[in-house]
Structure formats: C-alpha cells, structure tokens
Length: 460
Image (cartoon, rainbow, N blue to C red; front, side, top):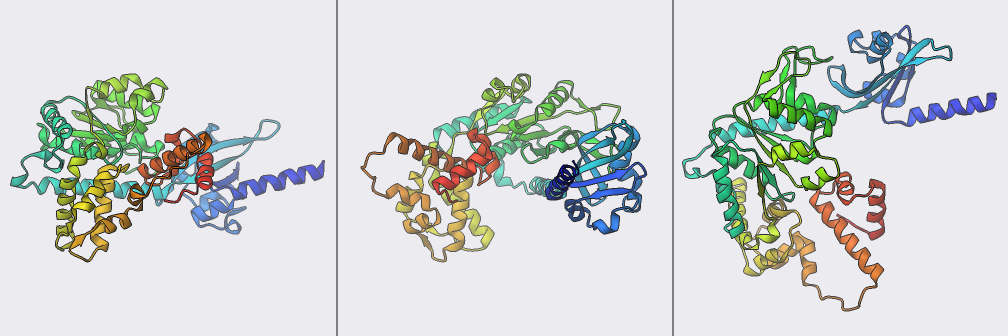
C-alpha cells in the first residue's frame, strides 16, 4: 500500500510540475505548502524562498485569491485577476477539505495572460491614435468617403451605390466577405458618409479579445469592480462610441454569453458597467463584419438568431478579388503610388505580362494578399520595372499556373487527397498560418490538422 501511495504521490508531483499554469497551495494559516515550476517563472519567486512562508509576505492580502476562497469557501473558475499590478492571470481557486470535511487549505491554478493583455492594450491605443489622426487629415480632394475603395467593376460600383444610400440612415449594417476584402474600409466609409461622421468610430475586433475580457472591453467597469481595477473606472467601447459608430469586426467570434448581453444592450440602448448599479444610456450605430456564414452558425446554435436578425438589417456582400479581376490593374497602380510616397522612391512600371499573371491568380487572401505581394515587389526590386519573373519569384504559387498539366489520371484516393491538401493550404493562407482557426474552419481537431500537414508535406 505504501509503495502504491508513494507512486501516486510522485506521479501527482510530476504532473503538477509539468503544467504551464502556476499552481499554488496554502494551508488555513496562509502558509505556502506547494509551489510549482510554472509559479516560479510567473512570479519570479523560487520555491525555497516561499515554501513554508506566509503568502502575505509576498503579495498584498487583498490580491491573494487563495485567502479569499479560504474565507468564502466558494470556488472560482477562470476569473480575470491581478495578483500583482504588472501581472494579469486567469485564476481558478478551490478550497481543500480532508476526509472529515474539515477545511485544510486552498489551491489556485493561474494562467498568465499578461502578454495578451499588453498586446491588446497596445493595439487599442494604436487604433485610437490612428482614428484621431484620420479625423485631422481630412483633405478637400477626398470629399467622398468611399474614395479608398478602389475599383470600377460593376459589382463593386453597385455595392458602393447602395451602401452610400444606407450610410445616410441610422440602419444597422452587416458587412460580409472573405478575409482581406476590405470590410473595415467599408465600415469606416459608412461612418464618414453618415450624420455621425463628427462622432467617434470605435472598432472592436471580436476575434482578438480573450473571452474573459469581453464584458469589460464592451461595457467598461466601475472603480473597485475587481482587484487591480483603475481607481477611476474605465469606459467600455460602447460608451466610447456614444453618438457615433461601433464597428464589431469578426462578430461571428462573439461568445454566446456575450451575444445575449450585447443584444440586451442594443435593444435597451443602455449598458451597465461591471460593478455598476446605474445604467448608462448609449446612442450608437452598429456596423458589424464577418467572414463566416452567420446563417449556418444560427442553424447549428453557435450564433443567436435574435442577434443575427438585429444585425442583419442591411447586408453588404463584398465580392472577393477573384471576381473583380478587371480591378487588379487599378489596385496595382494605386498601391504602387502609395508605396512610392511611403518609401520616397519612384513607383516602378509593371509589364502587361506580369499584370496578366496577377489577373490569372485566384487570390485566396484577396486585396490584403495583393497589397502584401506588391510591397514585397517594391521593397526587393531596385529596378524601374517589374517583370513576370519578379511576380513569380515573389509569389511562387502563381508560377504553378503555367506548368504543363500532367495527363496521367489520378486514382480516386489520390484525387481526394489532392483536393484535401489544396483545401488545407487555402484555409491556412486565408488565416495567415493560424492553425487553431484553420482547424476550426475545416471542422477537424488541431492534432488532426498537424498530422495532415506533415503527411502532405505542406510548407507555408
């Protein structure tokens, strides 16, 4: 029995030591009895420094979730927490009882999300600064907010004409299109064409906010709402957008719980900050965007039908670049002019054959992919012209279009695997190599995706 007990103890210690999450266990006096390697890395405190010592000597008492749970006896799960001013974590804490149901301590599991929070704050600050600069840099020659939407294809012109009409109203707009087609460009144009143009345009990327932070990002929080909260509180995106436009990018990524709260806020036209008791009235226009098929998400229960109908008042379907081939020469010319100003170099000429090659490509990444390719060509090319070979070297997938077709018939299995490989490559490009999102889009697990990438020899 002792040998089995020792084996179980060693196995448990090995498991806890190998986890990426910080594990801490305190007794009822607040003395630290377990502190794993991840906790050492997260808080920069060695085991020999903290084991056997009271946790109050290392953290402020009001910031210690273990002590709070010892008092409340109520476990918490995946709660956003600030154990230190410079450390952001998701914490799960539970009380520990012995065989006689006597309280003997508590255990916390903390996942460090500091890097994600800092990045999100930087992105938010940068976005706000760009928006302020954009308001100041209105030029007389750019009276039309849709001037940045380049192209003269009939499908695009028809969409712009309809969008201009709806922009002047206060109707909710849902912009649908593949990744990289310019959905945010349309959203900004809708705002600038509206009567709310002098008020804020506040973008929210629903796919970039950790789930635990959605509510505070959208609704804000009052002073003292949680440990480490700003003493003055903080307004959320909906409050910042009051009088203007709230742009919900990647709205299909909203968690179901937040969909309910967002719908209620839109219907009531008021919000409650976290920790707040009084509602705040908000007057906002919603423009949402997604590259997903929300109707399918409604059908499979991952998107609420009532929120979908609330957002889908006026729908804009932006065509992919492969359906706007005649716009590519204009897009190339315009972007080279922008790059010329940015890099203070003359814009290169591009041969007709090179343009034809660009027009023959299927552009899974749409305008974003085209812009990235043109910038690569501009930066690496020190000549005054761009040839077909330059284009093929910058985007090797294009050169495969001109290879002779193998006339040897494929077996049914080989053909299926070839289609599967091409589909995986396409989704990986569309998601810029993000394997988690790719697996989700393909309806397979991430482990299965890695196996298929290895099997097919896919290299990006």
